[in-house]
Length: 478
Image 1 (cartoon, rainbow, N blue to C red):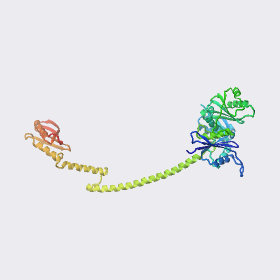
Image 2 (image 1 turned 180 degrees about the vertical axis):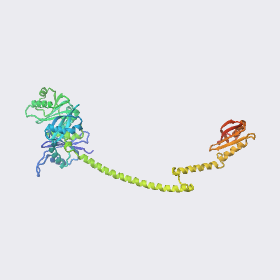
Image 3 (image 1 turned 90 degrees about the horizontal axis):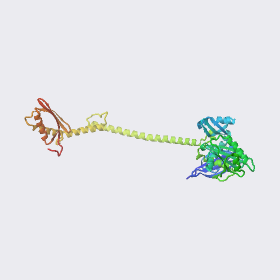
Image 4 (image 1 turned 180 degrees about the horizontal axis):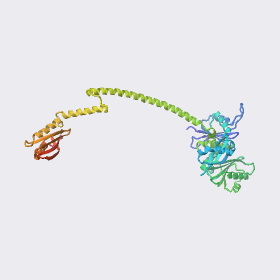
């Protein structure tokens, strides 16, 4: 399986840390890590964005996307109250809230945010505001070297995403994680069901015992946060040699415990910088946290451009294919119609020849008409041909034979004889009921005739009858 590489870049003021993640494996692994410190070249000072782009290009990495994480000294963060709870409504108004909080023209800011608490009448948001021109220069320098990150997010978001992978304590929303690294202290708290985080970076004085300064910073930090979930414990990690957990617990009135973090990239000189780069690289897998400066001032267009180009090529290909298919079927339809027209002309000429010049019927197919005429001809041939006991002449012969055998005393008058394909209907009258019965007897005696039904009714001085006869089937009684 080919590696699926994603680059995470954490940018500080004078340096950057890059982590290359391979996401093709079941467990994402760090494929590479390197640090970038720009150095002057013959043309002059090299910007950090240009140095990052050149370093990535020099390694010939075939990657799918890159994500940049900005260290906290690039931006200021403001806990604000929004009158809206829906992200779409907050998007439309958050920049004006940030302008008021920072006392800076909104046109010069690049703003993003996270919803840290949802209220019935609005929401609490953590707003991140950076200098628009600084981010624009950084982005354009990287793009000039062929590196176009899909997102530029605050360090707070990247670190929270990274800590979720290695710290069970941070995944809980009622604990405060305190990460000590050198003279810095990072305070983080997960909130809003893992969709946001409270974050603060402070400096601690270089004393042998930093317990008291840390306690004051924790108390000050918690007083400024509007947490919906109360804090019930403090978790310490990192360099804890100058911290006394027992004393800290007494000062804070919270249980204090320690936790060791195991990073996939091992120990580095700047673990917080590397962790933020790793968290940025994980953004394509864990999308719950989203805070992107680029959406505000220079939205990412790479995927959109590729999609538009692909759709344009697909549309052109489909148009050509549709035109070719349409032309093929149109040509085939014209050939078929031409063949049908010739065939109809030939059938019409032959129809006139066999029907003595008659024109084909306008409302009936020619073949249907010919079948009907053929059937009529065959019926006539079968009905009037000799030698068939079911033919009309044969049945009339049988009828006359039965009538001739009637006694002379029977005064018979026949009014109507109807012959169908199956029966002979005889309507008439006699001089009395006795004569009618004698007539019926003769029909019954005839070896080729059967009386199917009879109706006799008196009509003084005559006796009317209606008799239906049929020829006996082969093998029937005589």
